[in-house]
Image 1 (spheres, helix red, strand yellow):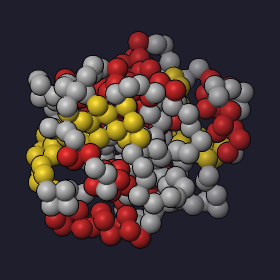
Image 2 (cartoon, protein in one colour; image 1 turned 60 degrees about the vertical axis):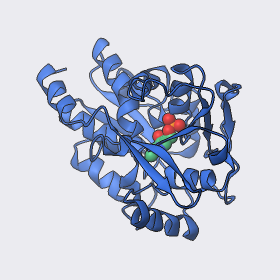
Image 3 (cartoon, protein in one colour; image 1 turned 90 degrees about the vertical axis):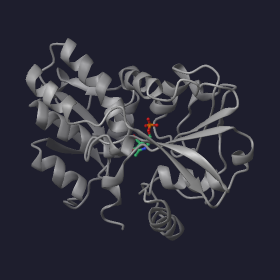
Image 4 (cartoon, protein in one colour; image 1 turned 120 degrees about the horizontal axis):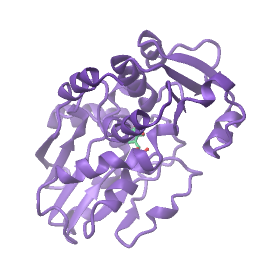
Length: 290
Ligand SMILES: Cc1ncc(COP(=O)(O)O)c(C=O)c1O
């Protein structure tokens, strides 16, 4: 990998990211928001935190390119295609749920950034999640594999940096982290790199089991609305617009907005001295809805 290109990429990132304190009228108290959404216009939020470790691992192997998989709106694939174009790494993306030549803005961007896109069936996607790579073309088998959503052990490496950026006294039993969950990689990393702080999230992918998250310090918030993954409700859209106009911060419709709604509806605000909400980015996904 060309080190100058890596340097250029690193210098385009706003890390450490900002920590904003906002007063939430709904619960009559202030919380901190870790503004990882501002790390970069494309590689925002936990996308950079998760890709960081994968790019390092890729560099240490002799792989010629990177392969990953995701859906047609995937924030992870969007950020990965961009990073690969900047670093001039060949990038192959396996896309499930891609029907009728549906060019979502996410896929159009990935194509413009020179990624190769391949449709795959939902059953192949499940095989890949189960680490069965038979469905991958031989030419892609030698590439570095990044699991869906940028997960895996390498995906957790960047969470150490996220934790290191929090204030020195953040890791206390009477403090709380509120962080979204997809694959659980971000949460796993936060749990791994802290010792005392309590952590809550919102279950997003119904069928996924998160065994490592069954820790004393971790719990799920009850959802405000019952809906399937990725479904965007009118109430969440309304909430995103109001939150932005009240506090000047845009939340994404899939992860951070439903989590903030669930948090505001919980009683947690009264139980903790300090609360850190992790803004994991994902705003490219808002484009077609807002
Ligand atoms: C914006 C956003 N927030 C949160 C998550 C969930 O993160 P994780 O997969 O690490 O649980 C994702 C998915 O990667 C995401 O795109």
